[in-house]
Image 1: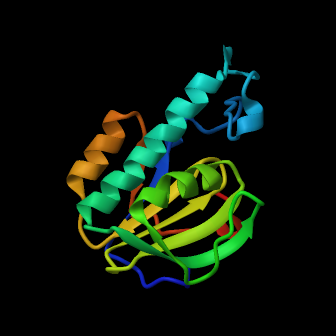
Image 2 (image 1 turned 90 degrees about the horizontal axis):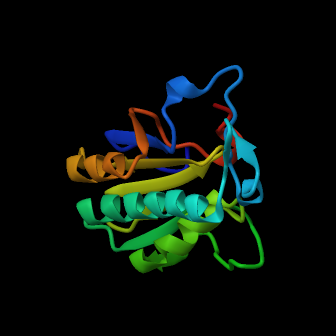
Amino acid sequence: MTLLSPLPYSWRVSRYEEQLRGPGWESWVEVPDIGRRFNGIVLSEQEYLRVENTYLAAAVRFAVATSASLFRVAYLGRQDANFALTPGQLVVRSDLGAIVRGSLRSELDCALEADNGRMQISFGYDLYMYVASDTPCEAAVAGAEEDGLWLNPGVPLALWEEDDA
């Protein structure tokens, strides 16, 4: 991603271990998958929302760890009628929930940079969330992992159109 200056620490956040991806493995990736069967398990709305909430909690943990309370819309691709963001717009940390949910649901394509320059966040295909910061954020990483998310360190931020992993 060329829109933001690189920060020394970065992670790709995912709901599953990367080693699981491969031939024969099926994965749900969006709201319309609710009610469908994957690997012998039916995805419920409750499970989808539980996972979505873990991403939201992770984003907030990183924001708190970096003292980020205000974010600038650094990149804005598509957005549906539920959003009216503009490039450069400032949003408060309490708005992260709607932005994370919208991004995971493919309603929004954006990247945010903390106004203090200490954190960045973007989203990709297959429920990937990318986070970068100026500190290692050990407590945020540990909290996200305790919630069941997988964090791959050293993966730079990506946008939807760049994210073909």
